[in-house]
Amino acid sequence: MLGQEFCVSDWLTMTQDRINAFAECTEDRQWIHVDTERAARSPLKSTIAHGFLLLSLLPYFLAQSPLAKIKVKMVFNYGLDRIRFIQPVRPGDRLRNRAVLKEIRRKGFRRWLVKIENTLEIENCPKPALVAELLVFIFF
Image: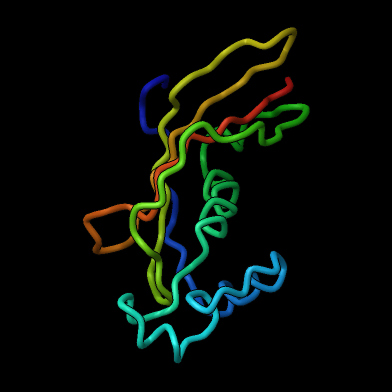
């Protein structure tokens, strides 16, 4: 499956409640995320989701993939190689992830480093919300 798309997730609707909850737990209460009245007067005409909120949803989307069904001892995030926030996500937007297996490297006995390219799509939008290469360490 190397170089191939291995998962297209289900759709998830972004809500203002989710954005507000993320703002609270990260202490990032910038007005463009949480002040709906002020944001309505901005060039974007709405609040938008935090970029890091979108990144934090990648494990949720990837849990729907065939990789999540492989029996392993442990999986953890190792990092990100490339991230681009391309299109703002507004409350009410529906998102899904397209995942491509970019690289697999053996890192010792029963240890593998996997690079997954994620494209977070916005329904009915020609541009994705983000593209990010996630690195995942897998112990078998």
